Image (cartoon, rainbow, N blue to C red):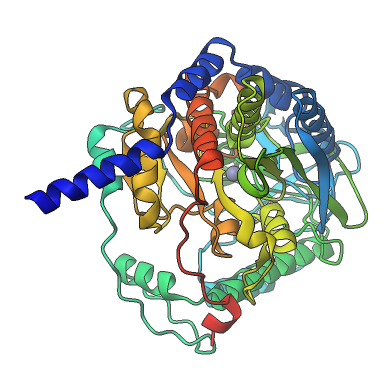
Length: 549
Ligand SMILES: [Zn+2]
């Protein structure tokens, strides 16, 4: 008993020395909730400067604006940091897809990035020439493309090609609400550690054998070495290039495709093909809502030939250009060479204005440093903000930054600065408020987050999970052994409406949620920047190149 008592007294003493300083929490909450600028940051990033496709002139203008704003708050060492080359710059100037015959109708459609422009408005007959779309199965896709080329050679000249297979999805009665928050039960599930999964031994050189059965398929795909994923991506890109080259050689005027996400006037769009000047460029390619795509196909079935006019004017560079990350700092007082970083990706797709992906995260991180500066809080360590480009194309901007400053995950050759970066906090899952944090496998961070997040429990922050979350820039830091974290955020309408869609606009951002996130991250950053020690780390990962052999 005595021993236990002694231990708990000891823990209580340690806890008392650790942040959070509740008087600072009070100040941060007051600044974040009574004097918030987060929606103002977002309004500029979206309504005025959006969208912000990487390496586009709009991105550059937005970046210059953000940098100026950060400097106006008193941040130091602000600069746009070049990386690359990224590929072509591409920026929308004008587009429309209109059915002219048998009736006039303006179709709900949006171009995919890095498509070629049309030569002004061009009208042509629509031909239905479906190419099956398959995921993760390069062998089958290669066969499909060979068959396709054999079947359609000589038949596409001067036509607009409807390339998606017909799928009768019918109207889906709304079983899921468009906008939702996590329930307590869902959060409890997220808090559970994942069951350990046995990894199958797959050698990088053996031929792929992807199982049909979903669970076996998942196990197989999660066991694939990184180098195989790399090869799969490479083969996928080659297939797209080959398809685009064929359509080009055949003289197709444009390509229309549907997308399972695109319906009810919602359009979702990413890239049409390679942005590399050395690769064949995609013909003018548009995603069309399922309703309007199906109408065209129904007309074909009725032996009518729909005539459609397409127009696409995109300003694009001939050569590959550099991209930029935005970086600025609040220098530390007593340990300025030690750094705590916050970041978010600043780039977006092109059909909306990049409000929830990821203007929201960028606006919150700008607000975090504004709050810390406005309160003039003394922090031992330097606080640095990084707003990344190229995230949508594969975390490219943050990977380049990490490689330049901290180390190369392929070789695990790390720099002196790697030892001085305490940690990195990232926000990139829409406008939803923070419900907790993913420990990314770092158990040693749990007691810190428990303490530091305690003053925000009543704002809905309840969940700390050992789980990993993927798909965003904290992974670039994690890959070289740095503590990198992404928060658990309420989904809201991110996956139903806004993610990569034409409705990813300012009106879908929720002010209260972004204010909550700003206060919490500002407080965590203050805690990390004033704590006696740097944040605890996981063991250094093995070099990726080595793991593959
Ligand atoms: Zn995205």
